[in-house]
Image (cartoon, rainbow, N blue to C red; front, side, top):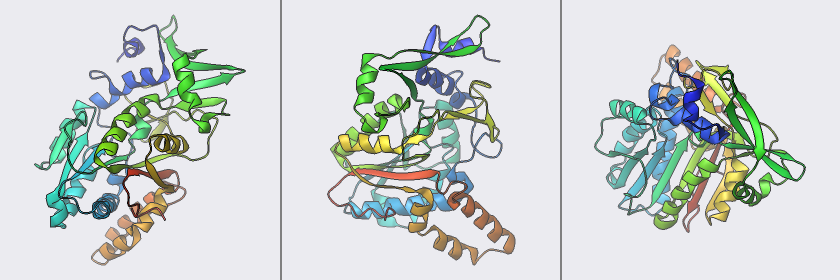
Length: 354
């Protein structure tokens, strides 16, 4: 069993984001570096694993976006945090049915975990796919970034407003090797960054995705240079909330946040209002943020299911619609998950948002 001490890497204390970055992404002992988290035998299921229909719809959306971008002869897709590669595997099947698009497209998988890269390579065997650690090698043609449950997995900072002071939450070890939380005066750099966002102005408890925005900075630069956009599907909220949204899941059940470190997934809810404000500051246009249910239905997922069901027996049909319900039901993923598209392009007729 790994000691809590290992996650501090010699530091006496760490801010929340740096601590959980070690827990999740350390190359030797990190959760994503040593365990297959996806699927019924893992800790959670993502939409591509629930139904291949989800991946098909994303494929169709990407093809229509290529159309909107003027059918360029070279078109780049980057999947951010591709999980076990299930989505890309279906995308390849969809793209084969559209030869002109298939000839134009290059697919890049951006994966931080070497362990998961091996899993993805095992699941996808296709010369069209390139694995990348940064975006510097992508130089020509428009680019679309896509992330499903990507932004929620990047650790966040947490702050508490006390009077006129902004205190940042840190973790440290007590004398019994137990992790405890402390609050310390925030750095002036963090204060000035937080002050830039109107959406955080009156909150007592603030979650700030500094690491996520650092990553987004590189993505936005690439979009600005080559044109294109970023499609994000994640669970989160639109109206500011004064609460701690960090959560841990292990074996498909809620897990106490600081228990089973390295063996449980840790995520937070995405503040889509903050992302909206961020993209506007970066001079990107934004389609209105919609619920996953709205987006998938607008893209014709129900009609697609109905077509497929005609060739199925009763048991297969029941399975198909049960999985569809999980994606669309307001009580399940339908409303909790949001879809956002930020882009740099003159035309704005990207579908699925109105």
